[in-house]
Length: 165
Image (cartoon, rainbow, N blue to C red; front, side, top):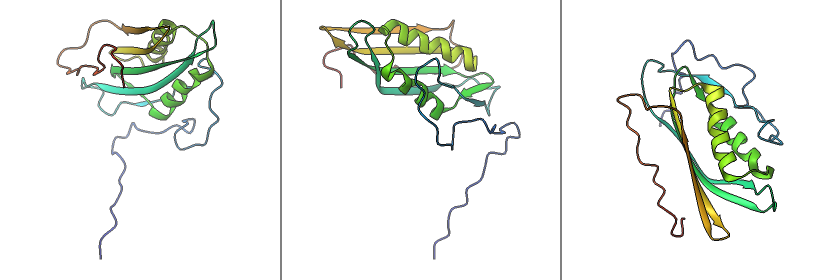
């Protein structure tokens, strides 16, 4: 007879999950990026410099002029300080751009700035690799300051456009 694995919670006293988190709750998708709530949770290793990476290979927004869909592969890297962005909230925030009209540069830089405002990381970088419309791919990169010492940051792994996929 096999034993059922025992699930334990982190023993970090500061990891109190506020009742206001979207995690574990059924929530309506936000109607716009401005209406989206970005939850944050305490960093269990605030004294350490380490990298967190989120990849959104199917990011979608709308062209503000034509209303046509634009697609991007987003790579978000950050070195947390006191806070981590909660991944479900980030997913909902990114999906709120689906019916939002904005240029590639505004989406990419705006996402980076919103994350900085909410979680105040030691360092953040976002790469927006936009698929071509009209024959021209647009890649947008934004970062805050200098990377803290001793942090390994792997390449974002997205090749220059030659039929990405």
